[in-house]
Length: 165
Image (cartoon, rainbow, N blue to C red):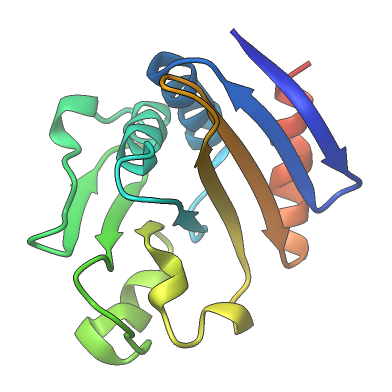
């Protein structure tokens, strides 16, 4: 069971998730709305459920969730579904720039880029994106805060919020 906690007109949307299943379901809802070229910035502590959320995104892109693994050691995994998904994990890097690892090409393509530990990207604050911050609220519960940065993402967020009704 999930509940809407609060909304800030147009730019943020917060829900509580009571299980990994609900977290994945929110990822799937978002994934089903993606059209290509979106940047999803995932933020949260180690083990909070960022990869679980991306498994849901994969389901919304007609990918198999079991193919989505934490890319901590490979850093970038590519998946082909309804739209290509680049699953990027910056955990092993303290700070990284857009031109490191060819990130610019992944983040600004017609594919979906889902980036875990996005805050480690040096240029993070200057990039339009949909941020997804996941926080612990209990043993099995999480708070998921969606924040739109840029008009494209405000529109996406409004469509996601309308799907929650």
